[in-house]
Length: 473
Ligand SMILES: Nc1ncnc2c1ncn2[C@@H]1O[C@H](COP(=O)(O)OP(=O)(O)OP(=O)(O)O)[C@@H](O)[C@H]1O
Image (tube, rainbow, N blue to C red):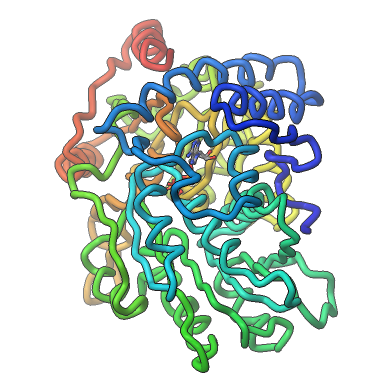
C-alpha cells in the first residue's frame, strides 16, 4: 500500500471491529482521530474535542428524511462484501447517506452499469465510488483494474486515503498517478487501483508504465470539472480513449454540480448511465450560513480580513483568492504582521503542496490562503469558515481576446463554500465585496443559488466578530 497517503485514517491505529453497535464504533473512530493527533501541538485539543459534539447532531440528521444524510437502509443491506463492511465501520460510518443508499445498489449491480451521480458537497460521494472500485477488484490478479481521476493532487491524495482506509481488510494494492510521485525510472505499475490527475495518468499510460488492458472501472470525481472543455476535458478524454475496448468498462461520474453545458458531454462520456440527480434548488446544503462584508476598497478588504483573524482561528478556515499572487501577497503580509497563516497554490512545488495540506489536515495550520486549486472535494472536518476574499469568476473573454467584466462562477462558488459544513456540520461562508461590480456578482450568486447572503457591518470589529462567532458555535 501507499506509504505517503495522508494518513488521517491511519490503518495502523484503527480499532478492531468487534460488534456493529453504532455508538461504539463512532466513538472508536473518534478515538483513533485523537490518537492520530497525539503529536499535534497543545492548541489543537479543542479541534479534536469538538468532533465528539458534532457526532451527536449527525445522528439526528441521519434520522431526518429531508436530510441528504438520511437513509432507510443499513450498509449491510447495500450488498457490500464483509471485508468492505468492516472497513466502513472502522471509519465510523454507522449508516449510509442518501447518495450512498441510492448509488451503491446501482453501482454494485451485475452486469456493471455506468452512473452519473450528483449530491451536495460533503454528503459522502467518495465512499460510494471507492467502495465500487474495491468491490470490483479481482485480488488474485496483479493487474490494474480501476482508475480514478480527480482535478488536483490534493484531492487525489485524499481519495487514496479513503481507498486505503476502506480497503484495510482487503489485499488491495494502490498507486498514484500524480506529478513527482513515482521514483524516476519506475517502469511498471501493477497496483489494483490507480488514483491521480489526468495529465500524469495519460503520460503513464502512453509510456506503458501503466497497463490498462484489464481496467474494469473508470471513475471521475468532480466530473463536471473533469469533462469541461475549459478545464481538464481534453486530457480526461485522452485517458478514456486509451481504455480497452475488448470488454465493457464501468464509467462512474460524481460531482456536486453538473452545469448544463457539460451535461450532454457527460451523457456521451458515460453512455446509458443510471442517473441520480438533485433538484437545482437543493444544490447547496442548508447548514452553511452565508454572509457578506461590505468593504470600501481592495486595501480595506485586507484590513477587514486581518481584523477577523481571531474568528478565522476558532476552528479552521480557508480563504479563497482568484489569483496565486494574491494568495502569496496577503499570506506574506499577514505573516509579516505576526499572524500565523499558510498559503497553497498550483505554482508551489509538489512536496511543498503536500506538506502544507498535511499540516492543515492535522490542524497545525488553522488558516489556509489558497486559490481554486482546492475549491473542490477537499474534506477537512474542522473547517467551519470559508472566506471568498475574491469571488470566483469565469474567465470570459470577448471576441478580441480581452477580458470582459467577468461573470461569477456559480459552480466554483458552490464547491468553495462546500469546504465547510461537511456531512451535516455547521459552517459559515463570508464573501468580501468592495465595489459595484463585486456587489452585482454577489447578487447573481445569491439569485442562482437561491440562498440568502446576509450583510455584516464592517464599521465595528466587535459587531463583525460577534455576528460571525454566533453562527460558528
Ligand atoms: N455514511 C457516513 N457516515 C458518516 N460519515 C460519512 C459517511 N459518508 C461519508 N462520511 C464523511 O463525510 C465527509 C464528506 O464525505 P465526502 O468527502 O465523500 O463528500 P463528497 O460528497 O464527496 O463532497 P464534495 O462534493 O465536497 O467532494 C467525509 O469526512 C466522510 O468521511
